[in-house]
Image 1: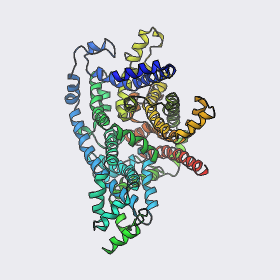
Image 2: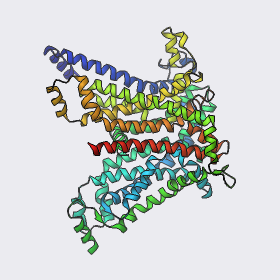
Image 3: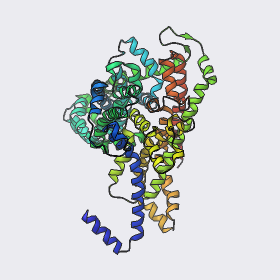
Image 4: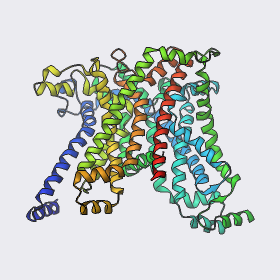
Length: 289
Length: 306
């Protein structure tokens, strides 16, 4: 901070005033838009910590005493403990299976060659563009036929299938950039392609895998339509639980806000921890798709 | 072992891939099987059911194009599709313009604390649409922050139930889309600007181009790909919006904020018109895939031409 002030002073003395004013303006405008992006969420956090009496003091007034009982009401009364459990049960296998399957196919498309690979790749590309609404009804029917409706499989399998589509493209692009010498050397030493993939390339692919992991985690955690259609009761994951609560607790804004934070917090924590991977994944992933 | 050596030789240049078709198929197969069963087969199913009268339970009856004919005369569907297109203004046009404006302001200055701005501006992107809906229901509520603020600054006449107002509910729901998408556009554009070669700007300065001219002739063309991506991503978001509206307004008041995804859900799972619902899904998918493909194809052609 002191350093910064010193530099500022130096620049003013140098007569760099016009540029400084411009920078100040940029900061001001950016900060305004940052506030617009962040304040709604801050407001809902404050609301979740308030009693009805506190709420009368205005939306952004600090609560007199932090009320954790709104969270308790959501967690126990509104069964969010069950929804949280469902979310975890669905997300963990979805992420693990998607990563393994995408790594294998991404390796095949990126480093191996086979007849018809372009047709296969285009077919998989379809999964990136087709909206979920376009498959949900036959999927619902299929799950009924398979006897999987109202089981976690009805959520995990379609999520894996859609994640595989993005994951294959992501990992293919990644493996195409990896140095071939690495693979060549290992193969000469007698390693199988299988061994090369898992023992040499997989550990070297951590940045790409991390981006893919956090994206699949977020998409699966936030999925709404599929869950709404496939399961009922305590099998529901958090977003659907929240939408259902909106109908029941319409009057109690504090409990609803606390519930919304329970839904959002895991993703936000992962986002803060791996923000670079998130932003890289969502921007360059969008560029590739 | 021989196969391994041959694989090594064919890949010896360090460029050509290993020619191991059987192995490649084996690596692709497990994921592709899941993908085929739970994505490809349902796509075919949706197209097929759209030609049937089907409740979702009874055996379907073939009725040809009747579902599509009915769609053309269905005021609810046309209204909902119109609302989706109205949302493009808020989801796509406004965020891109806002992103470009902020990018032009930033020019190429590298600011301290850019990480904080990026993390904050991107936050709405990682929230579940249902959470977004809950947050903005609170903000637009009759005793929510917006009305409180208007009352405090003396604009009492503007206080209204935003989400219950026939004129304002569509704009309010749209504004939520702008809130979600502008950070994404800005982050995309800032990354894009930093990839433009410095030489171009130096040359322009030598030629006496001012900041506005530099933006118009260097930054804007340099960001073409990012703008295109922002367009495709936000356009798809506007046409697919579901969870946010489900929580925010449930399509109301009346049908003012009704969207196609919600009709698809209602028709199939509440009114037992699964066949009719799949026809809506086909129309929506064709629009989404068509426009995305057109945008990307146009980009591809320009690049080859350049």
